[in-house]
Amino acid sequence: MSVLKKNSYYIKLMIPGTIFLIIVILAPIISTFVMSLQSYNFTRPSAKSWIGLKNYADIFTDSLFWESIWHTVVYTVVAVASEFFLGLLIALLFYRISKENSPLMSLFILPSVISPVVVGLIFRYMLNTEFGYFTYLLNKVGLFKNIALLGNVKTALGSVIAADIWQWTPFLALMLLSGMITLPQEPFEAAKVDGASQLDTLIHIMLPLLKPVIRVSLMLRIADAVKEFDKLFVMTEGGPGTASETLNYLSYRINFRYFQMGRGSALVFIILIFIILLSIVVLRTLSVKEDIY
Amino acid sequence: MKTFIKKNSENILLVIIVLLFIFPIIWTFLTSIKTDLDAWRLPPKYIFSPSIKNYLIVLFDKGFIGFIGNSLITCFSATGIALLLGVPMAYALARSKLKINSIIFVGVFVAYILPPIVLSIPLYVVFARLGMLDRYTTIIITHITFILAFTVWLMRGFFEEIPAEIEESALIDGCSNTQTFLLITLPMARSGLVSTVIFSFILSWNDFMYALVLTSSKTRLVSVAVAQFLTPHGMFWGQMCAAGIIAILPILVFTLFARKFLVRGMSMGGIK
Image 1: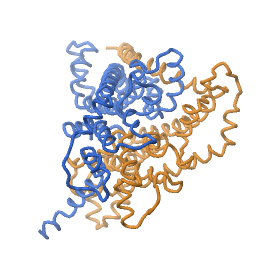
Image 2 (image 1 turned 60 degrees about the horizontal axis):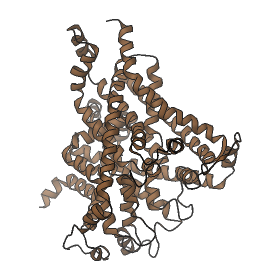
Image 3 (image 1 turned 90 degrees about the horizontal axis):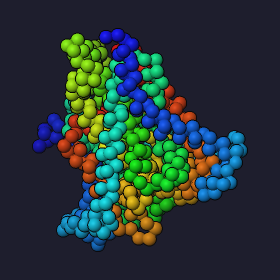
Image 4 (image 1 turned 45 degrees about the vertical axis):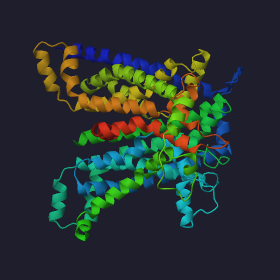
């Protein structure tokens, strides 16, 4: 069969899905950008006017914006870094015992697949000042006495990060283990023959071989951490005050509590640009990986 | 005993770690079958007589039967439609070498990791204008956005694992393109398809932000209903925990009966 005919068949298969994505994703994204150039409050639709880049200028001079960026950075860096190191240790332990996915893994993965809202609820309950079991255990060893962990400016963001680490460490462990299982055995046998220590083997052979998996799973986690919403909504609502408010949560508040959708759209567009840059990096990593094989 | 521990020290350590990680879920379950009086006790009561009262209250008095129905309608419709649109698209992306593929693929990936807040503003504005907030159609269309992207992303990887030569021999034997795809390739990708369906279902079931913004009393989903147990005046922890367990029940079931697909789907989502 001719290549041309074959191609036209493939194009036919792609058309419905692509049209759907254009209408329901691309069009809204463009309209978000258009809205970000307007002064627009959803509750007063008649008072809409074009103001150019003023929304962006206002955002960049707003201290709340910079504060939320800082919270987002702290959240992302602390959570993802801890999850990576814990996940790597646990994946290595799984790998030493068995070179394939064990039934234990499917129990271990539970925190990463259950509803994020429920993760938030569980931690809200466990960290409750009066009835929370974690609070009770922490107080017993003399930590955080007389502090409402979720209601204190100093501990609120940290508590949500702790919940995030609990939730996502299993995901990183699974990703890393899945990567380890597919690795070729020869380099490890050669290292053993050469008498390399286990730590050396890990640092100089395993981690470099795992690089594509590590990069992609870290990027996915960074994207998730930046768009974190559910746990914040349930555990702290960005509070107390704005002590745990990330960029994503700030955009939610501006858009759906104050309905300032012009300004809100500008905030969202900033998040979107970051996500698009991140996607490009991920896809580059993936295409580099395909070249190697 | 001592030699047993020594021999299996790594196994034991791993079991302890896994138990630590699922402990909060077990604890939540235990609270959900306690009476309110027992739930409030600290130090906690470890031995108590279980009661399913909280579940009865949550299911019937708080209307969770209805919310579960809403969530199931949304999950099944969105997953079904997304598969119909996404599986052929993934197949075409895996097999063809068109110039437009890379653009479509970038678009699909961006859609896959798109923060819900980005779409919820314009979709909220449009659906509110059309008078379509709090309708099944609205939440189903919205869920298709991320499920479709996820389906294409995952299924493309699974299709690429199937050698194209098998299809060529089917074509030579006189099968049409569509017959080859439906009768030869798709059955070979069925385990990938099962992973995709399970994960699509979970993604839709777990969605919170779209449901929070686009639904209210008539089409409220389980995720939002669970969050509504948080009220400023007094908490019913037992009921809240029961609602939480109900909300993660489908996932617990998948873990028990389809763990291979669950693990495979999750690792493929990021690796391929």
